[in-house]
Length: 239
Picture 1 (spheres, helix red, strand yellow):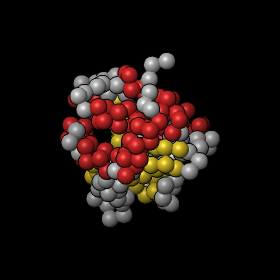
Picture 2 (cartoon, rainbow, N blue to C red; picture 1 turned 30 degrees about the horizontal axis):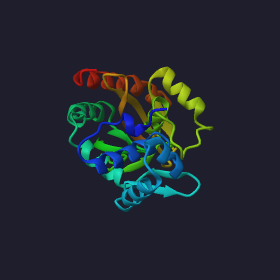
Picture 3 (cartoon, rainbow, N blue to C red; picture 1 turned 90 degrees about the horizontal axis):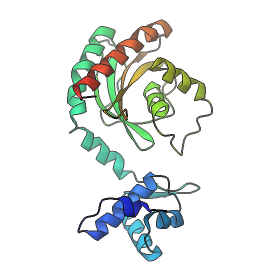
């Protein structure tokens, strides 16, 4: 069986190549030390030395009962990197248009490991409104944007989706997700997926507001509008 290390690109900097191979192995699901060594083809002393170094730099972490996972530094790196992506600039006019047409706040999220990161947001002009700070790291298991990432992306190792299966099936069927008081009491949201050229999930676009205003019938109106905004962003991205 070919190892991850043998498939990965190689450069003249061997220690970097081996470190990236370990990160790729963990990202692909290798959780134990033995599994990482086998997946990368590295000797155990080399794997041990590099894993320790990656942990020191916050690129890997060890979770009791789970094993090795990608470290918290990736959240900060992903948040910084995504600010440079054209996606954020291309989506901005659509966030502004959604905030104007719905009267609610609009957000753009990307996934980072087992979390979702708000990379842009436009606040509602209403005095009573929801506020999600740019850079906020939120769970996948609560909220409509989280359902989008779960419906069209890999299942995180830290989430039990037993109670969400029906909601995810509904999300896939109609193309958008909604939530009511899941992450924060009294707050509702609606989200739709943004896909790339090869149908990979890039982001989720959302509107959120007080549950009293954004109830079932309003969500049914906003869902198709979010899907339309997502399709237009995809067209600008060449999707």
